[in-house]
Length: 266
Figure (cartoon, rainbow, N blue to C red):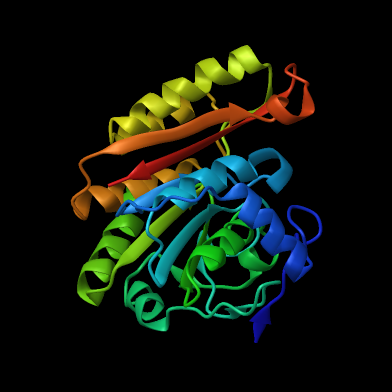
């Protein structure tokens, strides 16, 4: 079984050659790649957020094994859904790292094998072409995450950190998230920088509470919280903001923007 693309020719070019040309334009050339535990990357259409995603991805070493955490926009499927189907993409099929996936699905794990959420979700798919472009032997572990309590975020993070440690592999975690949605640029910037302050302080509980209590429409709050919790267990000591911008930079409309941020955790 294969997961077929949901948003090819909508969020990014569906033609292989056009996609490669687009990625070459969006990913800057860095001679020295930073070793990272995780990144935060936006997931809008490439015309809007692709430059932030490309700049962030281009800075870091992309290993063969990548865990992608994305929000569940559709509400379908299990609360924490793991896809084990091969992902059919314009640049070629991407397999699942079944060793890592199997370790995440152990007895008592909050993570469940489920394709329904993934078949209706774009937030993980749009990250894959960037990863493919930078790692030709890519294998992924895609997790689609609904709105869950902080305690469940902690349990999921514990499971991920334990699996990464036991695997002995070089693994990158990608947390897929846009920031504030459909607010004025001034409002979005104020709210987003409240959230980013907690992210850069490596404060997952502070980030979770800041977003929830201030009603910040950061769609990937659960993936980013889980990523931070897991990275702290894996030895994270620093988070760096690559760039923050919003959709108004492209559209010219600053009355209703979506915020985009790229960050590296090491």
